[in-house]
Length: 307
Image 1: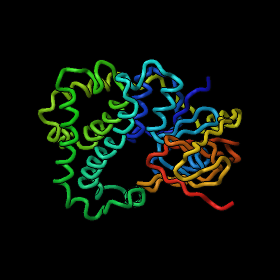
Image 2: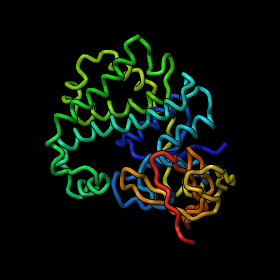
Image 3: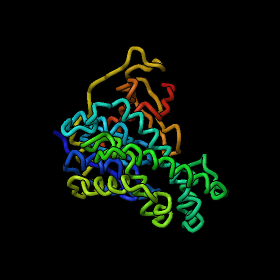
C-alpha cells in the first residue's frame, strides 16, 4: 500500500483538520512543508495550479481538500472509522457548517490583526479572499464575535450529555472539522478566545481530549523525494463517470477545476472521474510525471474547455 505524503504547513487550520484525522486513525505519514504564501512552485508542480493546503499525495494520485481526504483515508483505512455513528452523509455535510465557523473566526482575526501584517502577506491574503474587504472588516467585529460564540455554543450543546466526542464515545470527522477553529482562536487571539468561549466547560474538556490524540506519526521529507515517489508510481487507471452527471462530463474531456469560494488556483486536465462526490483529472509535469488530481465535487467549479 502506497505511503501517505501530506503537503502542508502547520499554521493552516485546514491542515489541522487532516492532522486530527491522521491522529484518530493512528497513521504513519510523511510530510512536505509548503510555504504559507507564494512562490509555491513545488506544490503547483504537483497539483497543476492549486495553491491551497493540505494536499495528500498517495503515489501518483493527488487529493485536494480535507473533505475528499476524509473519504480517501476512510476507504484505505476503515478502522477506526471517521464516522463512528454511521453518519457519513451528515458528517460530510457538516464540513460546510465548519467552513462557516472558520469564516467567523477569520473575520475576527482580520479585524484585530491584519493591519499589523507584512504588506506582502496582507496583499496575498486579500487576493485569496476577494469577498472580504480588509479595509472595512473591522466595522463588523461585533457581529463576527457573536457568530463565533454562536457556533461554539452548538458544540457545547452537543457535548452537554457528557459524551466525550461530538458523535459519541469515539472521535470522528465532525471533531476533526470543528476542533481547528477553536484551536485557531486560542492560538491567534487567546484573550478574545477566552471571552468568547467563557462558560463552555464541556467544549474545553472536548478540546483537551481531541488535542491529546496528537497527529499520528510524522516523518519530514523534501519535495524532491515526494516527486520521485510520484514518478515511480502509476496513478489510478479507473475511469468512473456518472451516467447522470449534472454537467454531462465524459472521460478524457479537458476541463478546468477550481474552488468556488476562494482564489486558490485552477487545475486543467483530462477527466478520469466525474461523480456526485468527486472530480479527477489526469495531467503531466516534468517534475512529477503523470498524476491524477482529485477534488471533491462539492465546492469546486468544473469548466469544460476546448480541445
